[in-house]
Length: 130
Image 1 (tube, rainbow, N blue to C red):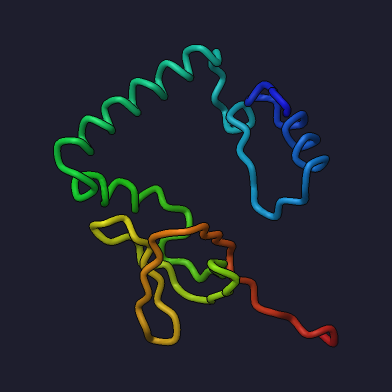
Image 2 (cartoon, rainbow, N blue to C red):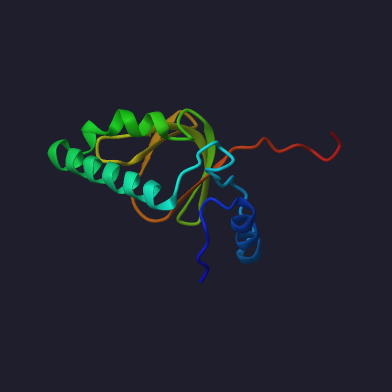
């Protein structure tokens, strides 16, 4: 088990590379221009989480859906979704009122709401001659 400073990008990268190869970007707040104490950062996170949980308690996911979708990295993008030993290529259309992920694939809308789901960006396969 590793415990590290979340603002130390190089240390995080070394730990991740030791444990496994991850093909998705990781974040570094300091490189993004955020210079703040960990305690203050955690206080802000906890405060915002508390407000969000209150809002969810009052109105359910409906009250948070548009905000969630505005931050969803894969919203509107083609992805490869891995779920239940199945790989599906499709376009992420958001989430429904129950929180299920909406993916359009081959003209069909599919919902994914339970189990382990992994999303990765879709990358066209390039032949070796190119």
